[in-house]
Image (cartoon, rainbow, N blue to C red):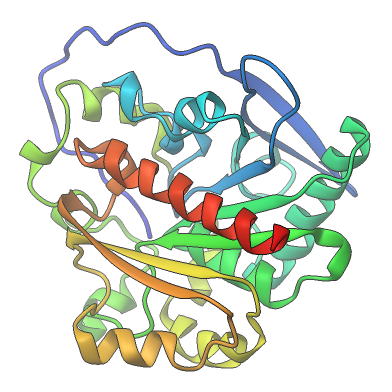
Length: 298
């Protein structure tokens, strides 16, 4: 979804964690991103993080409080953590000013991950983490995956099956929404969050913006093709998606997954990975990743 950042008094943030900027080749497209590697040894798997609309890879490496960074936490747990700027963002924004539709993005990102695996010379397994529009991409990728993609599972936040928005709000998909939809109460975020988020926020590429209102219908066509473990997480102050028990049943029932989990995070807004609750949310993501790896080895 398009993003707006509320005003906040500038504050001095802490020094960033040692996370490397990278670029991956995906056919004719180059994708930029951030990569964190474990301090020693071979990564146990690669966690691939896909940001939401109007954001960037830095969404998963929040610096207002470095302890909340998903990339740093995953690397400390022995995983490679790769947050990509989705097609139409980062270095691909210039070559792709209109962006890509979800199906095209899925092909592009899968190609980038295959190139990553070849470059690193091992049979790498991937675990997808997606937020909002990035969650839709992650679900699209696992629904259309091939065995050689080696996808362990998918963990998404801020994605549902039934809109909680009015038709008028959906019709404004290409405009900036009230920041309360994205962020919830501002007290949920560490000081300095909104100043540091300024460089992450930008317009949603038109091709993906056009698809926003149609996700429920698209999901209905994808769900029965998803055959890897799936976890859906909703913030306490989620405003885009219905997440009541009936909505969760409609979301999870069509899936062909061997394991389906849902979770709610208290004290969080839609942009869950940048708030105070991010650390415990990210630790739960890593716990689910452990479960997915365990199922493969049984």
